[in-house]
Amino acid sequence: MNAGEIKNQAVINNATEQFRSLLETHFIAIARSAEESFVDDEMQTEPKAKATFAVEWDALSLAPKVVVKIGWSVRYKDESEAMVDPLQSKLGLVEDTK
Image 1 (tube, rainbow, N blue to C red):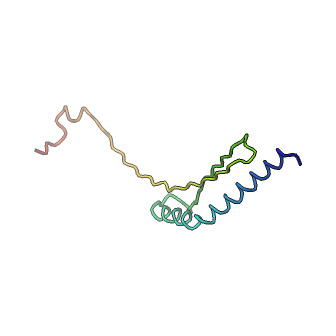
Image 2: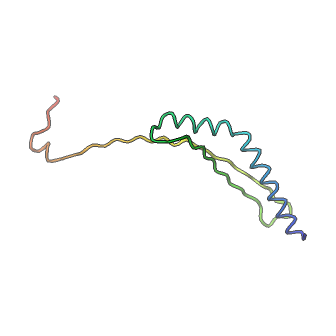
Image 3: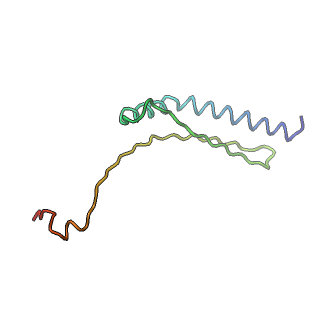
């Protein structure tokens, strides 16, 4: 293995360790967020836990700093709908609330 391959493998190994550590640390909170969103959303068939990861490293450095970030969120949705007919008010079909 040459120096470049050794560095590449070291970055991959380090990022993998950080990924595992972050997931282990936040696993319960991520799962709890999914469960809580499931309770409020009758449209879901089962709770979905989702996490995103980002990996950054200094590509040209001989001793790169490796940064791994985890993110998760719960998405809530709400909806409202109404028909608006501007002609109704001009025709006097809308009650006056004064």
